[in-house]
Image (cartoon, rainbow, N blue to C red; front, side, top):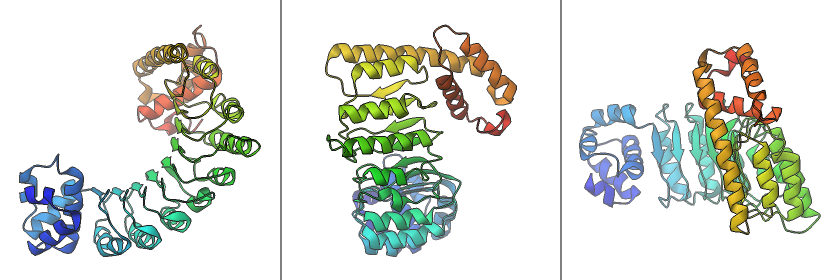
Amino acid sequence: YEELCKLPLKQNIELLIRAGLSKEASTRIAGRVYKKKREASSDEVEQLTPRSSAVSALKRFDREVSFRLCKLCPDDIGKYLPHIAHDTELTYLDLSGNNIHIKGAKALATTIAGLPLLSSLSVAGNNLQFEGIALVCKAIQNRNNFKFLDVSCNNGGPKTGVAIGGDLRVRHLCVSGNHITGEGIVALVPSALTAHRLVLSSNSFGTGLAPDDVAAAKSLATLINTCDHLSHVDISNNNLSAEASTIVLAEALAVHPSLVSMELSMNAFSPSALTELVTSHPQLVTLGASTQSSDEQQALSEALAANKIKMDEFRAFLVEQQINNWTSDNVRDALTFLMHRRDIAIQAPINGALLMTIRELDTDSSSIGGRQ
């Protein structure tokens, strides 16, 4: 085990093969050790030999594989990943921070086709470019069980949204650092319809100059408004001007019913407008923004703290009412209760807060009348 922790990934695979394990098992174990070497014990690794024990052990505890920052090249993807594809129970695969490029993306897409339970995938920082992103995303189109997809920092270019495609169903979508323009933002709309978390940071939407800056802001507002399920949005470090930021705030953030967390720093949002936003939206409990003075920061912090107290009271009330057994009538009763609270006076955010709490408690939404 100590030797496995010291050696690079490729040498680990070769070492395990020489020890008598199959190439498939060796690839899986080496990836697992790389990800969990500080958590796994030496006893666990000893139990992985001989080969029959390795297979059973992998089925028991190895549903996640990480090759993060392993300096994999395109040929490595074709060499090692096909062996991973034999385990149809794999749910998580992290290939971030390598350089698999378009050629590696083709091999990866083939592998994904053999992983029906795969629900989390990170290919961030692999220089996939537009074509590589399109190949990977096409391989997971129309999957209803996908939870997390990260295609950040792949030089996707202005039309990255087109590469991601229109039939993607994913709860957490991260598309940071791909230099998307207004057209690419609009193309993301079909892909983000089911997203609960949307990360679009560091895309340089804004040039700081009109009309491009304003056009990007309007596209961004359209995207956010279309995503009914959103609870978290990150548009930080996009260089939006004051005018563009005002458009995003007024046309999207201020009217979206279920956002509880926003990251808006490194844009020109007005601190006073953000404080007003937080005050009028009781479900909003986390907000990152660039402020110019300590007074502005304090006002924003106090507004967020007040919202957290309200939402804690709200969740306590819902738990007390045994939310897991609720019907649509119970939902209406809860809204009536909240609307009589003098410190909460806006209908749309309350509906959003209720929906978010139901999701957080893992309640079957079908028992309360479906999506609405």
